[in-house]
Length: 426
Ligand code: HEM
Image (cartoon, rainbow, N blue to C red; front, side, top):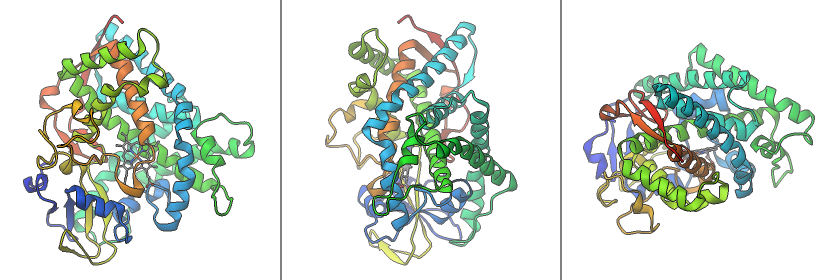
């Protein structure tokens, strides 16, 4: 983050660094929209990003473009309909309850744990249960999680070298261990779907089932086996790191702002009384949702949304060369004091009226046609997790004073947050 020039927090566009190809941060809402809506198809997903993910998720929805992407998006949308998120809720709840039980033990023994690892496990568990009706404790699911961790750790550093020295559209080389991790993940996902392909009538009603049944509206065709592995790999990749990243920041903030934690507890009490939290309840927890949204504003998991100029063009009156990396930046845009009142202050109430003056454009889920397909799912999941855990626990982060954000695959604390929890009487 320290490489970001100060000007990026006020300028509409900022060149970054001295790499072989130019890198441009796009900060103003108007230009972010222009790049992400991309009416003339000039700014596809960035080639480095696509190349780095290819061994894992092929040419799937997260990285594809043009007609391939349009077909995939229509088919994948069905897995995230309102009704599907409602169906996924019980599985989300089972995962949160498992974490609450673990925290009860930690509270009883006063054990310190890494908040980063806890959130990563929890959101991976949610994805596994809602996608495959499998919990993270199962051995093969644990293997997928471990292989993803290997993949995520190396993918950011591989990109950095190529980012500085590489020519546009040159092949992205991955170390052998990353390729092996990708193969492990693909083999296990294949193992989950094969029995379903053999017997499609007899499978649980989860997100994998929705993707298996999805049909191209033009041709009536379903996804092939390889395409299914690609798309389901995306759910894991796009859905667990992002949610884990923002939840780490939420609990860090709640550990230092007991007033906000208390407001959440009051809302939970008002909406749910003493009963368990239901899907309907989460719809009425507007304050908790605004805490989540305000955390996403200040700590967007996707720090920069990467694109590439596929031809020479202009943006904001400036010439952009073919091959330039165009990075739409929620991080700088959502901290811009020209766009947001008290931009650096954590104030969930700024979202109490959605169109309030002094609120800039919220883009943590992206903008335009490629906006996050899992936004409603992620919001329901986060509200449930925050409400459940804050209702039952006080959280203490022991290194909260020295926390520093870094942009890895997602926006993370540079050092893991070490926490203990104490149990509250509900
Ligand atoms: C807080 C959590 C999340 C955040 C902040 C987030 C953020 C984003 C962003 C910024 C994009 C746009 C990327 C771009 O334009 O290049 C995106 C796309 C996407 N996200 Fe999410 N995401 C989250 C959770 C999820 C979840 C839970 C899933 C699925 C289980 C998911 C699946 C996807 C997919 C499939 C795309 C690609 C959509 C397309 O290109 O058509 N995301 N996400």
